[in-house]
Length: 371
Image (cartoon, rainbow, N blue to C red):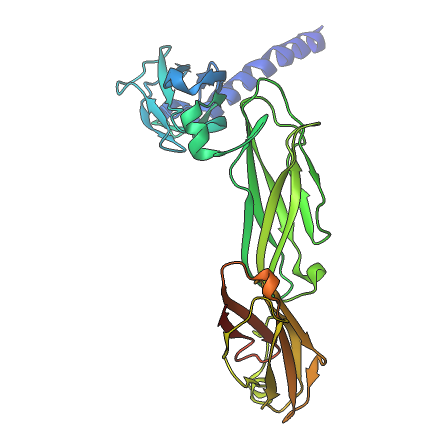
């Protein structure tokens, strides 16, 4: 009997001891000092859905509850961009009370989907709360024409040209092609006639109504295998059956000499042109094509590689029989001007000579004449 009573006493004592230990832990963790993280948000995300830009700013409220034993104040509420404006009460929020933060988004000049946030810092040293607002702005004609000026029904485009600028060595570079869906339906565009040195990628194949996406078009110079200015094109089909849009590509591929040592530069080839200007004078429009020539001399200490000789001007034909010039040797470049390709009575052409000379890899010869 005594044994049974002792067992019951122990069983009753254990929960009491556990409760006392838990209370002690809470005091040690700071509940007695007013440090609480018992802040509850009714929601931390608001979706405005789709709305017209012309409707002006839109607002929503986020409600927080103070479930702690101490008053709590909102120290700051900072938006991720200037288009989003939060406002909040400056008073202390009593235990058991609630407060609202109002967040306003200004859609002016911002057609398409948005995802913004507001970071809220409280006085109780709890973790910063991040409130999100999302939605889709249906742009008005004025905003669309300024931001996406090119109409490619049912889409609108930011540009019809992708200028890659100078590309040195084999390093790839991406340009972004932005489109906006101004129609009420989802659209699945396509790319056709894409050069093998261009890779097209996007986060989604379909453009939802009222939204924009950006395609990343990456150019790989190592696949192009040429130097100097490159002009090319590919076609963007806004939707099945729609009229394709030609997108122009412009890049300037340069050789990378950055890893050459001082000794290699000292022993490098040196390209010297016999002239920088060729004047053909008066030409007979009914006569045979005009001919001219110039020479490239290697005044360096190692073979000179001719990377490319070209002209983007119409009616200019160029021929050179060699691609490598030994030190101290020269090569002749023959130029032919076709009168039929000259439409304004003037010849004013540029010939670019690209070589392996690290000090002067690209040189220009200008050819002039008139009818």
